[in-house]
Amino acid sequence: MTRTVIASESDPYFPAFCEMYESSFPLSERRSPEDQRRLFSNRAYRLEAWVEGDRLAGFLGWWAGGDWRFVEHFAVHPDCRSAGYGSRFLSGWMRESDLPVLLEIEPVTDETTRRRQRFYHRLGFQDNEIVHYQPPYHRETPSVRLWIMSFPQPLTPSSYEKFKRVQQTEIMPSFH
Image (tube, rainbow, N blue to C red; front, side, top):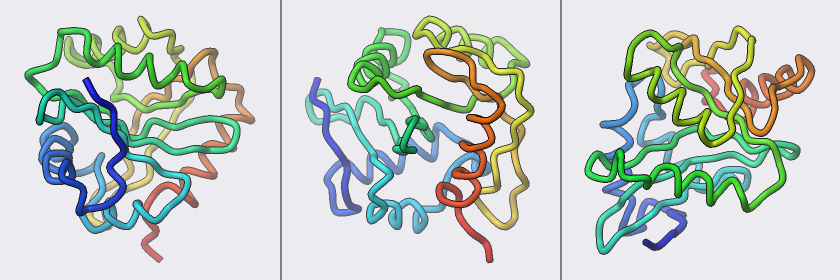
């Protein structure tokens, strides 16, 4: 397994990333292809990929927020799920820094969302009793109610407010 950074749309793994990204996230939870391409020039954003042989096994799109790291998108190829790939990818990445990690998940409403929450719990993520709305990725989509999970401890109200301000002003697309 090899880890690499996808740093431009000319990267040989960018087309496979786009395909996996679109199949893993609904429109309301993903960027347009143009917005995703623009991120390559943002120094706070990184798109990392895990490659097995010549196949993209998974990816992690994340933001350096100064005193935290925010996982915006994380996905594992369907053929690699339930085989420990996701745990190895994410836990290895988490060990590289002492900074807290934040991520969003859908509210737990069924077995799929419950499994996703348990996956993050096994990695040490904590639930937070915070009402959170992800700003829209597109003009035509609404904000999405998601749960914030954090590692290694729950967020304080002030640290959440700081994250929310950065998410709304620097991370999410602007429709001004």
